[in-house]
Length: 324
Image (cartoon, one colour):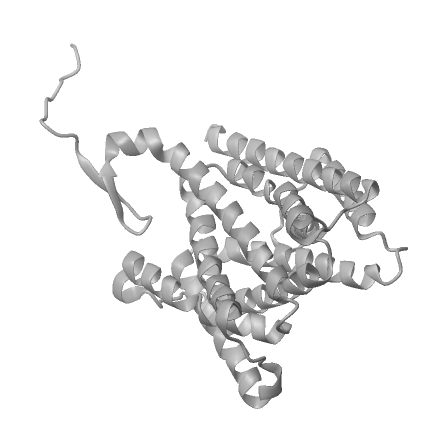
């Protein structure tokens, strides 16, 4: 018996929560991968813009001022997004203790990342920060009980060698600044594991709002008790700092939303475009040049991270299609 065909003047309409984007189910099935790619690429561009603004404002304001404005001006957009997505439950959190860990690791990660970008070549700092996936693989057996195979352990060893080459611990004063980049990567790795747990029971929009709101409160308390740490700003510098907060919130929205429409391996692979783009931005905008050894280390880091992402994709796919 042939399947029944039902004609309709219009395709059935469904809704998708990217700020409650509404589209037809047919067009959604076609555009879903493309939407994930666009969001991933936008996240890369916003991350690049964030680094450029941090680098640009570093000569005029200190790290406390940068963090204060970054957190403060990220709240409005995140609040609107959380309200639009979750309505009256935009502040609801089910895993309070895990959220506290997210705030701690996230705060440590952003401080170390800002310090590394302010004191190191842009591309080098970005490469170290993006090496977080290497440390995620190392921490996963201890914190998540995951089994790591020979492919991923080989990629970890290669990636750590790349980190060693990029940091160049025998380069004297630079080694202290390189330590900021390594600490940013390790904090980011711990944060990724915490976010996995939060993702099982809490909405990313609410988590992001709580994190940035807490950051604004802590930074505000610091400048209130030690006002000398808040540098006077105005003119173009003020606009840059406001833009830093707005772009930071847009980065989080795009990055978390990208995972809804694309496989994690796709999002992760596109994410590493930020490393060469940061290197080019550092060269053309700040006259920064990495030497040949550092470039080799960056290539090793990117390659090892891509192998880890690919093995994660294969592992998840095998688990999904395994017979019950």
